[in-house]
Length: 94
Image (cartoon, rainbow, N blue to C red; front, side, top):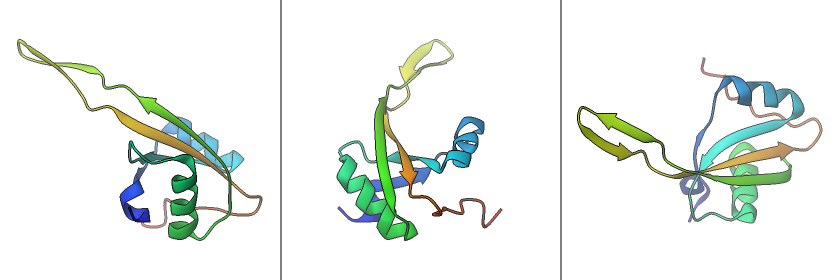
């Protein structure tokens, strides 16, 4: 698995934007990826030094469409802490 298959997308929410003050960034990652694989992928893609990786499995939510019920997909979230002085510019294009 290469780095771009492991890191699916950055998570840009109000809570995650506030975490950026503490050098913490959130990403949706492949469900089978380990913490070490996530660390190496972030370091390779963004050219930064990762000090910690926290992961969690997020369960899908119940959704309704008319009379039918279903669930959104389960996914995995990673919160990555960077070394002092490193940054990831997620809003460069915005």
